[in-house]
Image 1 (cartoon, protein in one colour):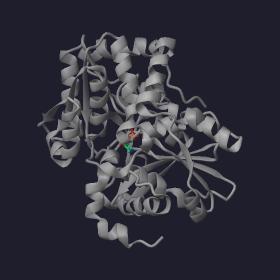
Image 2 (cartoon, protein in one colour):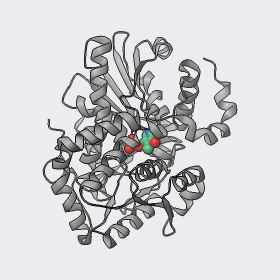
Image 3 (cartoon, rainbow, N blue to C red):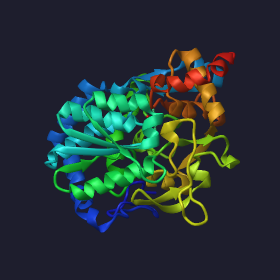
Image 4 (spheres, protein in one colour):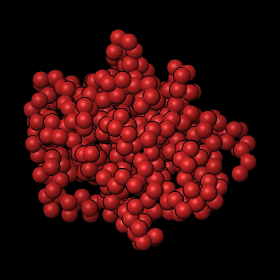
Length: 399
Ligand SMILES: *Cc1c(COP(=O)(O)O)cnc(C)c1O
């Protein structure tokens, strides 16, 4: 099985580039140049240096002994929560802004839902002294006030999308409109392994540093590069793509993708795309997405803002339908339990998204000799308001 996209950006039947004609020049420019730029030693030198000195890589691989004892298997945590800005997203934005500079761009646009990608984009724009405009649904701006203020502090202009449901998909429409109007000087930084080809492949390659480091670190620690399981949460799928990438062609490594089931898969309030989704087109690619019988996108739900997305990247749609990855769905309540558990057992407060990956541990069927790597995509500081709301519950568990 081949897990790389073909020349037109397809993973099996998923992927491609379904875009308005006016966007062809912008997207073609990227399609024609991204592999050559990524392969350029000068680009790599600059990228690797920023990953080391600015992002703080390599991130540690930490053996979680108390969690391991509880679940009867060897659990390692890949500490993406220790990246600058508190999550993996900056691995991608650092790479894309360097690429934008190579292409002669001076202006960056992005769209954001929860605000995490907007913050990671505003961060690298400040670093490079580039103009930064982030589109965000008006309702999301109200819900995610701290991230709006972070972006502004970093010098970005946050523009409210006031059409439709005033959330992520409306922000995406505004960003695309902007890009069509500014094809020459502007680069559009997409934040996950979604969007038209080449974005899913570009973002997966930029995040693949996660699994590249895992292999080295496992070798140093255990004398073997391959774990038995790699577990990651999936919103669009960028941290999972990065964690899986260098294990895709190693069939002995079980890949576990964890989605948000919200209030429950059949509750009507979830984001469990692999179970509820059907093939359709979203954000310029053909993938699995949650839709009604008329093909209208269904509003997703998760307590975790970063997993609240109605689709998954085309790579993950392919990994799921081909059986290479196993998908598990985790409800809000289970994720909250895992937030408290990791905090209490290991002294690490995870992001709510990340807690979904941790909550899958009891379902893996891993034994005492097995090595399980959980990708700890982000830290919980940004979720403190939610944790406060559930403080009684979080403090009521016994460990
Ligand atoms: C954004 C985010 C996610 C979900 O995005 P992916 O592209 O699926 O990785 C997961 N964890 C954290 C901490 C995030 O900020």
